[in-house]
Every structure is written in structure tokens, then in C-alpha cells.
Length: 179
Image (cartoon, rainbow, N blue to C red; front, side, top):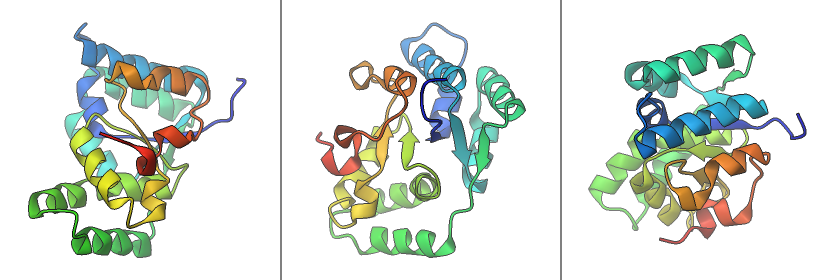
């Protein structure tokens, strides 16, 4: 392995969509997960994320996760309560969010907290919640420093990014995201 081993938070949306069909999103998610395995990166989860994975994972994702566990590349991270409370407060106090956006941010706040407790890398198909966290990143430098990729968007090159070391690239950080 020529790259530094990174720990990536992989949302359950990817686990759900990584089935065996040749649908472009399914294939992109499978390729992304396979590249994480092939390169030797780890995957991070906390209790909330693991429960989501177990509820929504495809058969492929189940096998992939088992292979990752057998290689000891699954990292259970403890998200400090102080970080969870801080993020909850940030979401609740943001004047940039409406009530629907606040609810969505709270639902997926575990992704951000998990990223804070690992290498600051998130992968998810949910662009709506990514946009919400992008909007509040102006209020919190720490949220803005998270690298967030969507493996189903070819223009993001998430699989190539993983293959080349899942580096923390400024353009991929939430604070620098446009659109």
C-alpha cells in the first residue's frame, strides 16, 4: 500500500445503494466500497451509524463490511458528548436553516460527529444534508473542515480520490463547496 491509511465515515445511503444491479448509482457505490477495501482504508462508525447500516445495507454491503471487519479495518469511534451537544446547539441556533433543514441536520449529525472523531472524511449520497452542513460551515470552522464526497456523482471522482489516498483536499471541504 503506497498511501496513508485513512478512516472514512460511510453513510448508510451508500450501504443501501450498493446492490448488485448495474444501475449507475449501485455500481458507483460498489466501486467506491471496493476501492476503500482494496486500498486499505478503514471505515468509521458509531452506534447510530452502525444501526442505520444494519437496517438498510444491501447484501453486497453486508459482505463488504464483514470483509472489512476480518481485516480489522472497521473503527468504532466514540463521539464525545461535548461535540454532539455543540453540534446540536449550532444546528438549533443557525439562522440559515428552516425547521425542515434543522430536522435533517439533526438526523445526520452523527456523520459529522463521527468524522470529527476520526479523519474528518464523510461519504454519502445525501446532497441535501451535505448542502445543509455546507450552509452552517460559515458559522463553524470545524464543520467547514470536513471533506464530504458523493460516490454517485461522477464529477466528484470519489473512487479515484479513495484510490489516490483519500487526501484532505481544500476543494472537497464543506467550507469551500458551492452549489
